[in-house]
Amino acid sequence: MGANVAVTNRRMKKSLFGLALVSLSIISCDKKPEGGTTATSAKPTTATAAPTPTPAATPTTTATTKAEAITPSDKEPFESLTFKPKADKDANGWPVFEIYNASKKTITFANLSGFAYDKDGKFVAQTKPVSWNPGKLAPGAKSDWDLKIGDREAAKVSDKATTFELCYDSIWFDGEAKAVTGKGCDAKRPMGGVKSDKAKK
Image 1 (cartoon, one colour):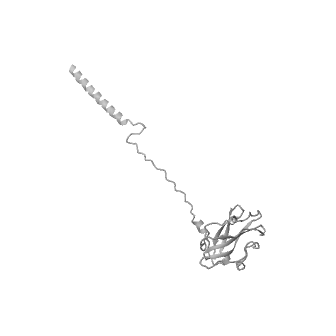
Image 2: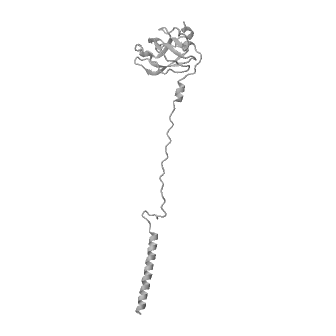
Image 3: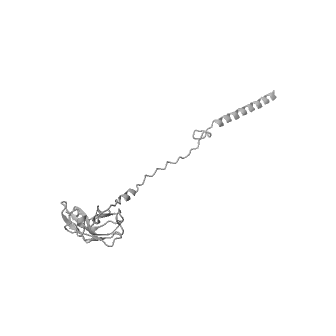
């Protein structure tokens, strides 16, 4: 009988040992890693770069450059230059002028004077003549530098002056033997100037 008890005890120990192994296997399978997900369910994450913003278009100066030129045409000598006063003024109160060649000839020289008139068109002041040498100003082109007519020995202009104009009584075209001279750039000059045919000598 004692042998049977011993055999029975051994069998019970084996059975208990087997149950223990099964329990451990079940526990191992159900155990989850920290974070609440199983190792097999975790998905790798990929960092997504933020889209690069498209830079704003930079305005070009093409239109401005084209606007600086004018369409040349056949002109009388004393209609060949076009003057545009700017908002800028010098220390004497005279505006700065842009100069354009409106003719179909290249211009190399002009003798210029500035005139100022009041609101009623009456003469106020005149500058000293200026020898203007633009190099070779092509037809339709704008001079590379603006003219400060009041910087050249010009007295300070009166506050009465509201209109400013330029006048020239001599102009030289490239390739010609001499300059074309005229008249009309004196204190008797009316606002707006005189007709081209009357400016000729």
